[in-house]
Image (cartoon, rainbow, N blue to C red; front, top):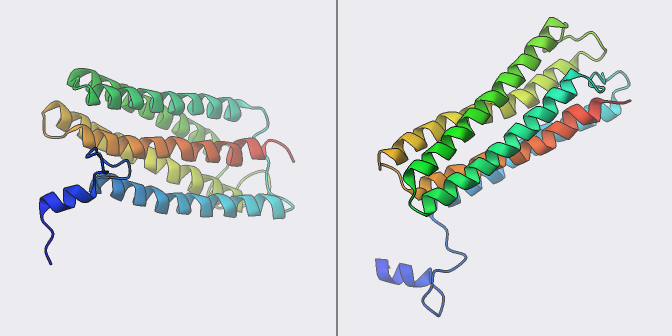
Length: 210
């Protein structure tokens, strides 16, 4: 039997007639499902990296307190700050302040670009020192493959987020998107930051000492 729109809406409200706290739009639901699945991917690759680091007798530990660690700390600060600016963007959009929301999204995008630039600078320095997907000067060749795979996967997520946030900001400014699109992609950006909070200690801090 078909369910009318009013009957469907009734199921999404509580007995007082107010919106149910469990109600969620289809776009947010899709994003949450993607985040859950993607979190499993990162959990798998980080677990594999941890297993290799613990079990391999010649696994390199190149990131003693060095420019790499300082660079990673700066990157962490920038990505954390960008989540804060994304929170401000969502808040401004909910208040109907379109210009402020777009500006905060723009600042978030700039922070993401700086994060990528710092990451690529680190990659280039490692490559100049002889680190590749199949070789490194410190020991186990698989280190390069695992390091570039994990950080590259996260870097791809940051780059994708920048592209999408740019499109959302333009669309919202032109009144083609609503606050819902900003909220949905804010979830994605928060996820990117949370994942980095696992990548950074696992890959960098965990490799500082034998």
